[in-house]
Length: 228
Length: 228
DNA sequence: CTGCACTTTTGCATACCCTGCAATATGTGA
DNA sequence: TCACATATTGCAGGGTATGCAAAAGTGCAG
Image (cartoon, chains in turn blue, cyan, red, orange):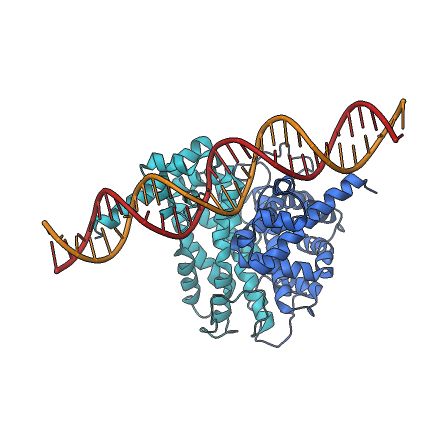
């Protein structure tokens, strides 16, 4: 149980984030100033920057622990499971929270989609996790030793050792999985309150596993092709 | 042949962009002010904003016509070609320019990679095209009529008519293809000057077409699995 | 509860980004 | 040359973001 200090910090951050999203939903994110957010949250404008590095960060709501949880799930997945399935299951578990709090996620999706800058920023946070996820996948499929990532300063555009084909595969799988999750969330948001999010996620990954063939003529079913 | 006025405009824009990149390569993009860029280009700071919408835009160099060219290529692809292949060929054609002018792209890539904000901005420009690409794909596979996109103000987070499974598929294919292209470029950058970019792009799309199965044990070959 | 260490919040000053407006300079065509 | 159109510039003003030091709040002995 955290102390009062920690609880207050969380409350302040939550208040700022919620105020930001609600104001943005009404007036558009670009027209919501830091001063307005701070006032709605009951703190000074200066305090805003103690919690968010930039104006835009308040709308994105990045959960820094989510990435680590997903990677852990991928690491601990049953040995025989194909990589794509392992990632799918890991994402499905993490995204249960999304399905449960649909209201706030729908609101956030609307805000982000109205301003490309923010959408891009959200994707950027996603990309930062992408390299880590690629590393986890590489370890899982056995193309790289677990400890083999010395400095966090290493960038992706420099030559690396290891199996080249597997590096490309890991990178691709991590990137595509993240993109698939995003598309699933957006599509599910578009469907309205009644949609079944796990079903959408399953459908998206079924498309991927099938190699993205052209789906058969419209049948009215939300499911994709046979897959398997 | 353009008049003097047009030539001067191009020169001013080029001078600003070049000054921005050169200064950024030396001091880092974040430490290069609009004032410094303008002074190096021999214009007033105010003029900078007549050419670029933001400070960051000077470094990114977005080609606004690229998206439309790719979409046109997808529309005009042979009728029998699977959607994934059509998109792959369209991207391959467009990205020939990238492979040919590697020097400028590498320099730009170095600048962008030092500041995540700019990298994200560059990628975001492509993401904005995603919805348009999805529409093009939907038309191609026949799940939507060509003119059926009345106002450009319509957002993707609202319910839409049409075949639901196909909407999801089009969205997914557009998003995944863009992601694949990005991964290919990054991987090609990481390989150094000798790498064969078309080969990397082909490899990435082969992985996708195969359904992202775990690749066989490392053979040293950059190629993925058998694929088609 | 009281004092002390630590953290958070806040106001102030500062630099920079970006925009609208009006004045000025420059290219263009009659 | 003259008049028109467009580009450039200076200026004013608002918004973003950071560093610093004072003020307020929290946690923990004694």
